Amino acid sequence: MEVHHHPHVEKKNFKEYFLEFLMIFLAVTMGFFAEQIREDYVEHKHAKEYIFSFYEDLKTDTARLNYLINFETEKIAALNTLQSCYDSLLENQQPVSLLSIIKNSLSNTPFQMNGRTWSQLSNAGGFRLLKKEDADSIISYEKECNKIENYQSTLYQQSQDNLRNALNDVVDFSTYAALYSDVTNNPLPDAGEIKKPLFGSTNTVLLNKYFNNLFQYLRVTVQHRNGVKKLKSKAVLQLEYFKTKYHLK
Image (tube, rainbow, N blue to C red; front, side, top):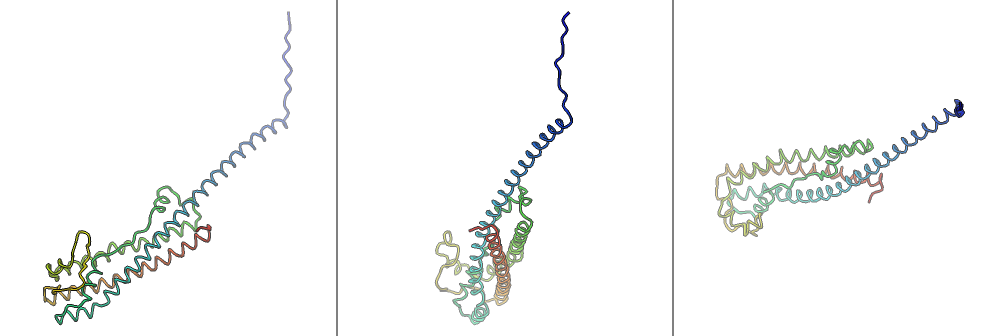
């Protein structure tokens, strides 16, 4: 009978087992750190993209705020002639300033924050990628924008509505309509002068109501411009902050 001898298998000692374990452990650990570094790099890249995007939004907002400040300043200059205009009307005169007052009180031009990046940060959880000071800065700016937008939709809009109603009570339709050569393409009065009395009613109660609403509108407009100026200063500071910190253009 043939006798088969099993091959001799050399047993590994403890050091060899430990070395294999160490190599596997190091490979897994290095893989973990490599993946972590890759994720950190991707998140850092996305964070910079958010910052750059918000920086561009700030530029748009600042341009809009500049326009609004100029627009409101012209409106306030026209409305500052209220007293002399009112006195002239009481004397049955038709002051040239009346048409300017009406034109500059027909509508508001509201500010709305460019919310492109804000929406992305909020909806996609992007704030967690930003440094705390950057996230706090953006959140603070958005709160200031909300204050302006809330003011516009409440007190400013209410004042505008009240003024329109008061104007409708006192203005003469045929004269007022004649000021619009093409109301479809030009929704603002464009006549150079008033040829007939614009306020057909001599009712001093209605006239007083209209000018009281004008005065309230003037005060609200001044407050709005002050808020817009404050917001613009904050936007400019943030532009400089992100420009310096991230070397943006």
